[in-house]
View 1 (cartoon, rainbow, N blue to C red):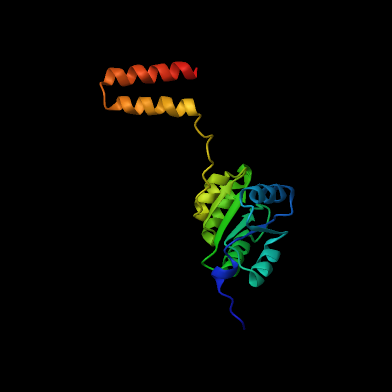
View 2: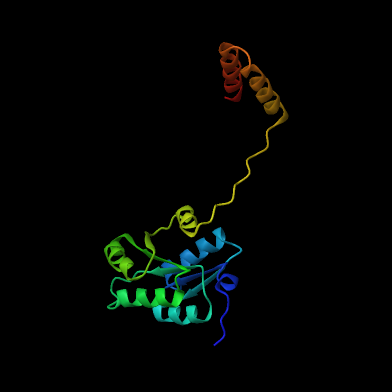
Length: 172
């Protein structure tokens, strides 16, 4: 048996179980736009997910909760075993399937999220800091006003408030 170092192959891969359904497909598109440098893989079923994870590890496994599945707890436990302890296993569900998700988290999932997913929350769960979006650069006149305001900080409070009020009024 050949062992592949997990950190070398899992680093940039997310597996969505149930990802070819309408809900999972939309999730794959969302994740693809947020994690554009990552590989987003989808499989139809828990069984397919277990098989996929035995060949290619993933940092995150997102598994859709189907509350009609008879052996949902066993399916989640099988995914956990296949994913290993270093991968995160996160269930996702619709609001009506939340009771089932809550029940089967104990079978090996790290947590669950209710759809639609908040990608910022998902990033935090994965330990990823979202990129800082650059703001528009200050215009020269804004920079000059800011410099004058900061210069006034050393002066009297009334002078600082007067300049700040002028700046705010000019901005409106």
